[in-house]
Length: 497
Ligand SMILES: Nc1ncnc2c1ncn2[C@@H]1O[C@H](COP(=O)(O)OP(=O)(O)OP(=O)(O)O)[C@@H](O)[C@H]1O
Image 1 (tube, rainbow, N blue to C red):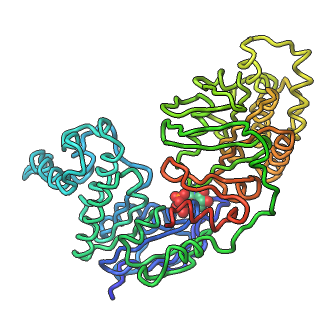
Image 2 (image 1 turned 180 degrees about the horizontal axis):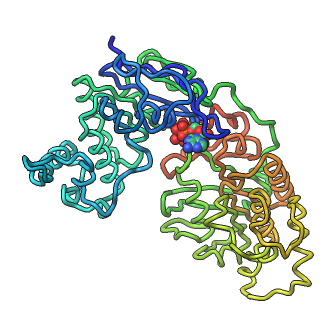
Image 3 (image 1 turned 135 degrees about the vertical axis):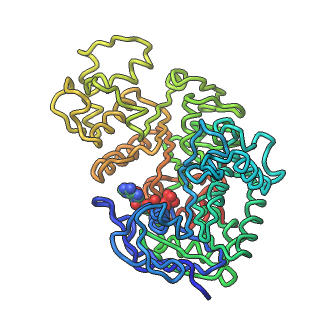
C-alpha cells in the first residue's frame, strides 16, 4: 500500500497553547480517511501542518514517501495537497469562476486571462453537482448572491480546480443539504477511484461510516487510535474520542416537582427549529452539543434579540412573547453573553455605568439615583468577588475575568427569574469560573431558572441538572441522571445512531 500521508509525532504550540502534542496520521493512496475528535482536539492544526499553513514545532511529515516541510500553502499545493478550509476563504464580491481559479487562472498564448476557457472549466466543475444546486450557481454569478450550501460547493470546487492528489476536507459538508452531500460523496468515491486520497473531518458519525475506509481518532492534541471502518462501531469510536468518562456527582432531580417556571414549545428562529424545553424553578438546564449547533441562537431568540418565527413561550403557565430584549427583561429574563466585546462592554464608561446598564434598560429611565444604586450594584459585584478599586474607574482598567463579572453582576441587579447564560466563561480564569458557578447554583437554590450554554463540556456536566443536546439546530436528546456523562454527551453530539 503506497502511503500518501505519513505524519509522525507532529507537535505545534501557539505561544503557551499546546495545540498538538502527538499528531499521527497515515493515509494510503486512494483512501478516504476520517479524522475524528471533539472540538479543540487538534484536527485543524494537524490538517494545517499537512497543508503548509502552519509549520510544525517538531515531528516528521512524509507526502508520497518524501520527507517534506512546506514553507507555505502554495508549496503544499505544488506537492498536490489541498485543504478545504472550515472558515470559508471566498471573496464574496467576486464571481464564482474568479474565486475558483483565483491566482491560477487559465491564460491565453499572450498571457492574458482566458475568460472563455475559465468559464467552460468552471461550468464543467459546477455540472458535477448537477441537480443538487440551484440555477443561481453559474460561473459568472457573484458569490455574495449564493445560498450558504452553494457557497460551500464553490469552496469545494476551488479545492478540486487545483487537481490535488491529497485533499483535506475540514467540515466540508456542514452547510450542505442531504442531496448535496450525496452528490459530494459520489464525487469523493470517483476521486478515490482515480487514486486521490481524502482526509475527511466531520462531526457527523453517520457520514463517516457512509464514506470512509479508515478512521484516526484524536483526543486532547494526541492521536489515540487508528481503525478500519468495517471493523469498528460508532460506539467504539465515541469511546475513543471520550477517553475516561467524566461523570459528575449525582444531584437530586429538580424536574417534576413544580409547575415549570419556563416552557418553550416548538419554537423556530434563526439557526434553530422546533425546539421544546421545559425548565423547573431552581433548575440549571444545559444546552450541549458541538459548537454552533443552534445553542447560542436559541438563547438570543428567547431573549428577543432575534425573532422567533414559530412556537410558544410560557412563563409560570402564562403565555408570553419576547419580541425585544426590553420585553424579555420586563418578564424577568436576563441574558449574559461571554462575547464581551460585541455584546456587553460599554467602552470608555465606568464600572458603575457598566453595572447600571441593564437596570437602566429595564426601568426605561436614563437616570437612576447613584446614592440608591451604588450600594446595590457594589453588593452584586461583591457577590461575585469582582476586584476593582472604585466604581468610578474605567471598565477597561479591569482584567477580562473581572469585566465579565461586572457584566454578570449587571444582570443580577435586575433580579431575574430566568437567567440565560450564553457561554459566559469564555476567556476567564479558573478562579473566576468557580466564583461564577457557585453563584449560579446559589441563584438556582433561590428558585431562579437557569439555561446555560457552554462550549466546555465539563462545565455543563459539572453544573447542570439536565442537558438538552443540540445537533443541526434541533434538540436530539436530553440527558439526566444516569446518562449525564461525557460518553452520552459526545455520542449525542456526534449523532451516533
Ligand atoms: N492560532 C492559534 N493560536 C492559539 N491557539 C490555537 C490556534 N489554533 C488552534 N489553537 C488551539 O489549539 C487547540 C486545537 O485546535 P484545533 O483547531 O486544531 O482543534 P480542532 O480539533 O480542529 O477543533 P474543532 O473541531 O473545534 O475545529 C485548541 O485549544 C485551540 O484553541
